Amino acid sequence: MASPAVASKVIPVCSYRQLEMAVAEGPGAAAGNIGIPFLIANISKSTCSLHGYPKLSFSPYRYKNHAIKVTHNGGMIFTKVNSRPVTIKPGGVASFGLNYGDAANQNDPNGTPCVVQTIDVTLPVRPGTVNQNFEATLNFNFCFTGFVVGLTSIEPGPLPKEG
Image (tube, rainbow, N blue to C red; front, side):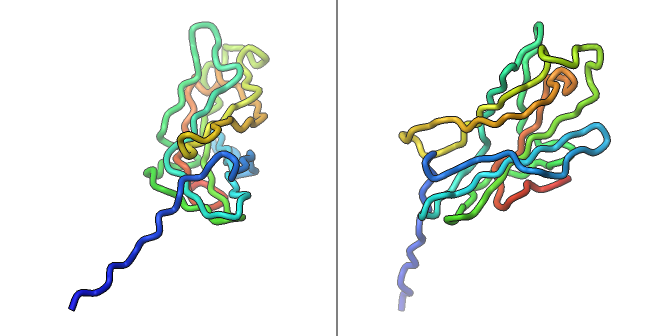
């Protein structure tokens, strides 16, 4: 006798309106490396999911002939975790981490030309919905990072996996 088929419930991809994002307090610094966690909260009454990496746009992002490059490999504070769908229940949170070193290019200025003031974050939300950016105010010297920052994939829970 055949057993009845078990229906698996498909969890829809989150829409922009279901989410809020904030920069959180985190592990901070270790031996010339900085880690900044970002929280993604589901403020809706429906479970949804996200998969992949957020897209980051920095302002400013360029100094002379150099621009910030984002790598999807984690870093010294938050480690690389393979991207997979993350389910976020109502009132639940997910996170991702931004990592960078702060000891490169010490001859570049430690002021306005090299200091990020805002980051626009675009989350991988449902296609066809209003894809607005979340804005984070965050100051760091991108010249001192060597113009490279590491980004983790979206992960379940309030803090990305630490290294």
